[in-house]
Image 1: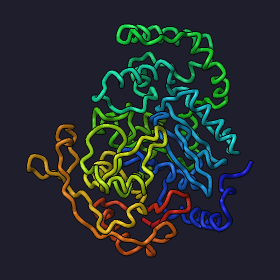
Image 2: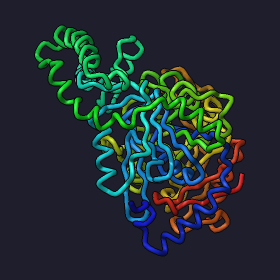
Image 3: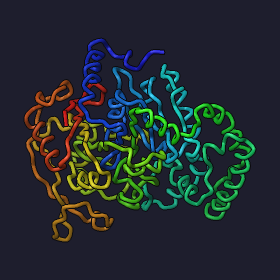
Image 4: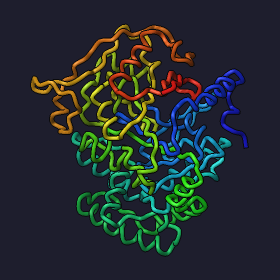
Amino acid sequence: MRSVADTSVPKEANMIAKIEENVSMVRQGKATVLVGSQWGDEGKGRITDMLAENADVVARFSGGPNAGHTVIVGDEKYELHLIPSGILHPEKQNIIGNGTVVYPPAIVKELEGLKNRGIQTHNLFLSENAHVIMPYHLQLDRLEEERKGDDSIGTTKKGIGPTYTDKVARRGIRIGDMLDLAFFTEKVDENLAYANAYIQHNFPEEPLLTTNDIVEEYKPLIEVLRPHVADTSLMLDQARKEGKVILFEGAQGTLLDLDHGTYPFVTSSNPTAGAVCTGCGFGPAHIDEVIGIIKAYTTRVGHGPFPTELEDETGEQLRQKGHEFGVTTQRARRCGWFDIPIMKFAIRVNGLTQLALTKLDVLTGFETIKVCTHYEVNGERIEHLPTNGKLLKDAVPVYKDVPGWTEDLTDVRTFDDLPKAARDYVLMLEEIAEIPISIVSVGPKRVQAVLRTP
């Protein structure tokens, strides 16, 4: 089968080859973690796709089909939701770890979509301990969001929260449970009785699902997934022992973390770097590098506090220029200026060793760019991100103005070729972060990147 890069025009193929040749400039250890360092949508998929050149294994460790990664190679655009971005490299192993939740109809559809475009999928492995999103989870998610009305969390209604709830309550169904149809039917029957009792009591007008309907829907999907099911923790440990390079791909972002994010407006899992250990069964002592992906401005989907949000013409300009619409939901993202306290928070809780700055090109054309240096809450200066939701909601951003630039960045491939104002912007953030910015993205395609030696 053809490789993805074959779809590129010759000139761009040469440029991609040059980028891939220089990827080794980015410091990668034997095990490198990539995590979103804002509210998600930072461009993790394209950075994973780029760094996968040096990896043997690419693994997802948290979240589910509520996440969306876009990777553009040549004229081809790939929108991935649960399958790791490394799938675009046929020689790489791709792993979906036990910390994820899997909706069989969605992942089978994703697999079929890739196959139809000539992408090999035999190299995808799915943890037998990952939990399964069932149809009643989607039903519960939707009903709860509708019930809350204006007080809703703003979930994607993909059943993620209810699935993790069942996991914590120790009544969840795991991928391995599906492989024995009789046992799977028994588990569905038990869990559906619980879900239907709740629905009937709280939403008496809602039609109820049946065990038979669910089993009949999932039966053919199980057979599609069966060859991909494996003990992925064992696979990762074997890869480590063989000296292979492993790249862990995060989903969503630090501020959506169930423990460390802007609670309760968070996801139901842990997108932070520590979740690699629990979400893939991989020991912390074996992690070498943690790279944070951070956008040159800030965006957020859904409800919750957002100190630098711009609800004006500038915010709309960022949204349109940056194509800030969700991959999974197509919802318009809220947009605002870069937030330094958020960056510092992400560096601290993830133990970041490097940063990848994305979408620098979107800031082209702004005469002045604002950067939030700290907050004021009730007249008090606060340098850090408040963990108290009320304080964060009341936080007023304090900005520093920096010069903008007008030059198009999309064809720039070396740091020295960036306009001085753009270089100064990157260097300012790097100095504040106190860790290197190794990658600067200047466009959505694989080739549109500036790589720097840390």
